[in-house]
Image 1 (tube, rainbow, N blue to C red):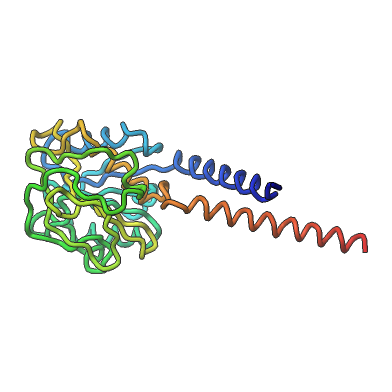
Image 2 (spheres, rainbow, N blue to C red; image 1 turned 30 degrees about the vertical axis):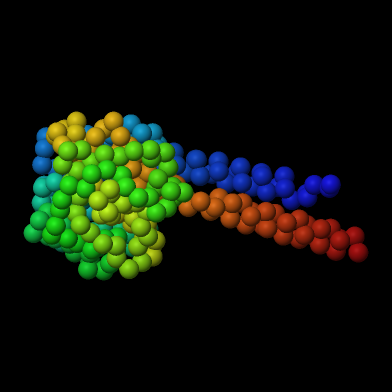
Length: 275
């Protein structure tokens, strides 16, 4: 059986695309925008994410309980993660800023407890009113348990996730997805855990967990489970470094088509020269 001459080209294109994605991943830096309550909380989140190796660039932190960064500061990063344990210094200003960042193509991971209403440490501003966020705000929080049903096991957001336990408190909010959001995974009690939306210029991921681990405060997520990977995958996905399944193949096919078109043009030029 004669082998198609396009197969080696397709394999080469796919390999080149994968190498390109790897090179880009090495350049992806992220910023953690946290409003912490406990001493060492920001350092804990930072070290957990950096320790996964999923984010190959810098993992920086900014305390948004005491101040709000500028758009120029955010734009030095491929993605940011925002969470609240205490109240934000300026919940509306931060929400407006995040919407501007997404408009400019930046990726955002909104983690707990920012899904609460503004009076309960939640995020507000244009990020919420303009429907950039993945989940509706809620005033109800409860203990949610551990990783439950996974609606999209092949999603890059679930890459290498084997287990996740929220700890003895397992804090999360009883939230529902907004229109345009894709649900990926739930807690064992059925509450939303992970989802995303891609209908703005930047990718927004909703992660309904408190990023601070039990290493800082007993009862928070169990660091022997994959909470760090959940956060790191979410940031890499928001930074466009973990593409949806099949996207590399699509890029490879496009590269093959471009190569075929190029060869046709080359043959046409040669034919015209010898005519």
